[in-house]
Length: 275
Image 1 (cartoon, rainbow, N blue to C red):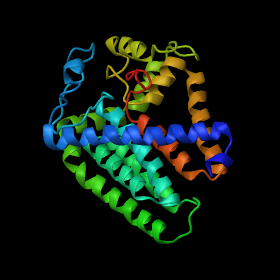
Image 2: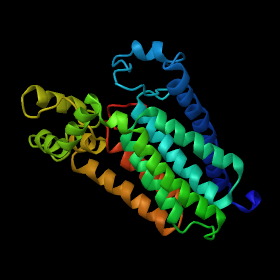
Image 3: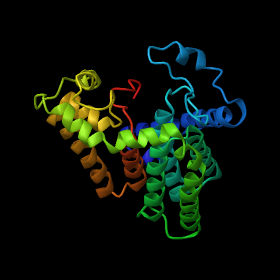
Image 4: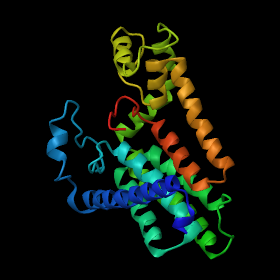
């Protein structure tokens, strides 16, 4: 079957498979971190000496692995879990189902609510979407697993949701629209400049123009840093998801959409350079 594909499609398929395998290995380490070690012995010493130390400051342990902040881990695991889940429903195979399960557990180990919600939406979309599989045994199992994952994520993140820092994050995200409008009011339509959204945001915050020294949304960062062109970038992302749906490539569209939903809930565009 691989010989019937164009070389570019073969390369893309191999990249997807490699990403799922590497992601599964990292997710397994995330589970080990959260369940057994309650530490990251491989990378904690590097995170502690960074300009912006990535140390445990939450009421529950959140895995950091080699990817850094738990939200970045959560975004990666969520997108790959949706992608692996879609492939498992379409083609079956014990190994791809196992990858899906490990990625979902790794997502839970990060304690990241936004990526968990994005992943739940992606799983439901893949389960009910028109992927190339009849509504047979695999699809029934997929629907049950998707619904179970939604309930499991809600239960697993309940303790995290009741913590003081989680309520603080909720307040910051609830004010992100007002804060973004305040930060962009005195800026040109092209924004503060590429990569300078956080700098402009902190400057305005120091001047009393906004309430918080950071923006809890990558889209807010793009709006401040790039202005209207930044919003055009967001629109292009949405068009890409619609184009994938038009091709009936639901798993890839769901994984891409999952990434877009997850990254909207934290300062990943500029606050997390590794993205």
